[in-house]
Each structure stands twice: as structure tokens, then as C-alpha cells.
Image (spheres, rainbow over the protein chains, first blue to last red):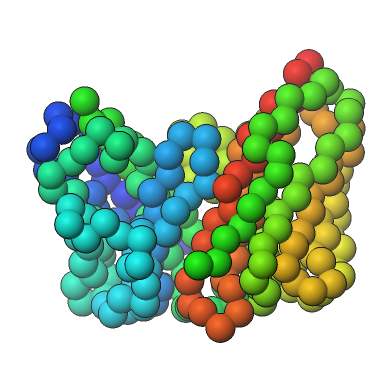
Length: 115
Length: 111
């Protein structure tokens, strides 16, 4: 079974530029998550989708971050314009459904450096 | 806002020592998971605890879920350099659909 795919793996941009990350979850998984992880810290949930609807985006900085999951499958996370503090790993994850006891599968992450 | 606080934040120990990592919240969690993450990789699931008071063992790792399902601990016996990594607790708070992670404990085991 293919895992969660993310691209690009690494990205370096200048501040005020834009960047987009792509995620392809495991086939059939209804729930998709985007997390931001700063080095050495726990991942912070940015947005959680159930199919193509948003379950939670309370910690998504909506003035510069946007995410969509068209057709309830792939998802893109965009940052525009980027700030230095956006340097982090962006982890995409998916699970069969939303709810307790769910197993969540992670991609390898997209590493962003803003200079 | 549901929070999962982990302690300690950093831990550096010698090979063969024992250690305990704590994960605490003011919220009740229907289940908690523990992950280990190595540099450059995503978190890897170690265990899920569901029942209050539950204890699970995974070789030298012992996981416990608090009776009130608000806290959990991870105990490592005779730590080895291969245990080095970032340990994360995570879960979905009861009554919400959000899945959140703890603040993380970075463990380094010296040979």
C-alpha cells in the first residue's frame, strides 16, 4: 500500500515569496491533516479536512496560509507571502476517518526554509 | 484550547539508564498515541492507549494511560543509543474531532 506522498521535499525561498506544498493521502482515507513542525517541537495542527470539508482550521494563519482539498483527495497548502518564522517542516497525514483510536499515517514532510 | 504538555522537554542520559516522559492535559482524551520521530522523517506510531489505567509494554518501553484519561507516561528501561529521538504524545480530545500533538521530548542516549 502506498503511503502519504508529499512534494516538494525541500524548498528554500526568500521572505515575501510564495510557496505551495502538495499532498496525496493514502487511497480511501477520508481525513487529511496539515501540521507545521518547528525544529525540536511537536507538530501543530494547521488544518484538518474530512473529505473536502474543513473540520478545523483554528490555528491556520489565514492572512497568509490557505489550503484546499478539491474532490476530497489531494490537498495543497499555500503560503503567501512567506515570513522567516514560517521556516519549518510541513507534515501531511491521513487517516481512514475522523475520531478516536484512529491510526494516522504521516508523509515524510516538506522542509521549508525562508531566508 | 486543548493542550498536551510534555516533560521534560530535553533529556540527555547515559546508555543503560532508565527514564520517564510525561504527557499531561487538562482535557480528557478518548485515546492517546505515542510516536517517535527521527530527524528528516515523519512521526512513527509506537502505541495507542485507550482505557483509563491501561498499561502497555513494547520491549523496553512501558506506556501508561492515567485513570482519568488526562495524562500518560512513557518509561524506557535500560536506554540504548537507538532510542534517541523526539518522543511525541498525541490524541483526539473527547468531544472534538481535532487530533493534536504534545510539545515533544527530545531524548539523547549517549553510548
